Length: 86
Image (tube, rainbow, N blue to C red):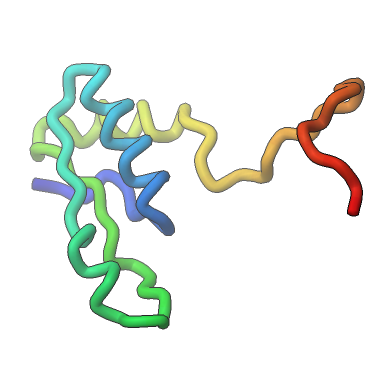
């Protein structure tokens, strides 16, 4: 098993896992059970998405095409942004 992606949060880890599985690449999230071990302190670097050795190059190409960790998209003309000012 090789680490294909180091996630900052559980959502990104599972998004990558499901994207890889949709492409036919078996993927596993390691470190998920360690998240509660730090109590109130956040733990970084424990979530890893791993794939079989032979699938690593294809997985890295697929992950590079995902929009993870970037800024949220901003809409210029949306009349109903989904929130109200306080």
